[in-house]
Image (cartoon, rainbow, N blue to C red; front, side, top):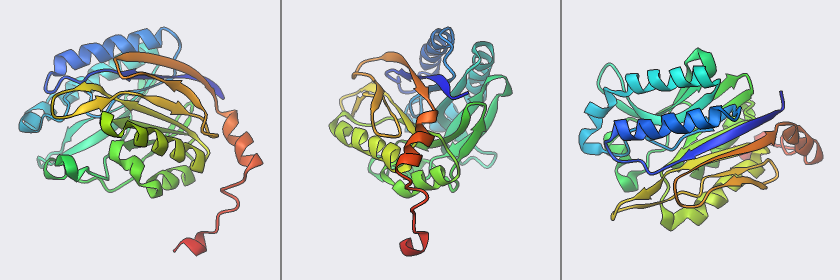
Length: 261
C-alpha cells in the first residue's frame, strides 16, 4: 500500500484538564477514522499540557488515557501518535510519544531526547536516550517531539533506519512559527521523506502557540497546512514519491560518512 490518508488534530490543549482534552481527541479520531485515515498525529503533551505543578498526579492517569485511545484506534482502524507524560516505576517522568497501531495497542514509544531548557523541561522531565523508528502496516514511522527538529542528526538517523514518514508532535510558539515551517521542510527535503508536524494552538498570556500544523512531501511541497485555530485536517499521500525522488537525486547513495566524523 503506497497511497494513504494522513490526518492532524490541532487544538488548544487546556492545561491539566485531561477530561476536556481527551474528549476533543476522541471526537477528532472518530471523525477522521470515518474518512478512512490511516495515520493521525496529535500535539505534544496533548492530554495534560505542561502543567508542571501537577505533572506527577496527571501522569498517573495516562494508562487510562492510552487505553481509551487504543480502544478508538482499534474501532476506527487508526495509527495514532501523540505525546503524554510517562511516569516510570521509580517515579521519573518522561515526555513520551506513543505509537498506537490499530488493533495492536501501543507498539512503540519515544522519550523526548532534546529537552527545551528555555521552558524548564529539563527540570521536570527525564531525558530520553534512544530514537524510535516504528514498523507499521503503512511502513516505518519515525517520531520526534517539538525541539527535536532543531537537531538534524536525529532526523538523519531516523531516515537511515528506514523511516518513510517522520511525525512531529509539538507545542511550538507563535513567535517562532516561521522557524517551525523552515525546520520541518528542511527535515523532509534533506531526508527525502514525508514529514507531518502537528502543533497545538491557543495558549495563554505567557505563551501563545502558533498552530500551523503542516505536512511536507519529500520534495518539500506542502500537502496540508492549518491556520492558527483548532482544526482537523486530512490529506492523501503516495509513498512512491519517496523512491522516485531518491532515484532522481540519490542523496543517500552519495553520502560520504567517513568525511563527517
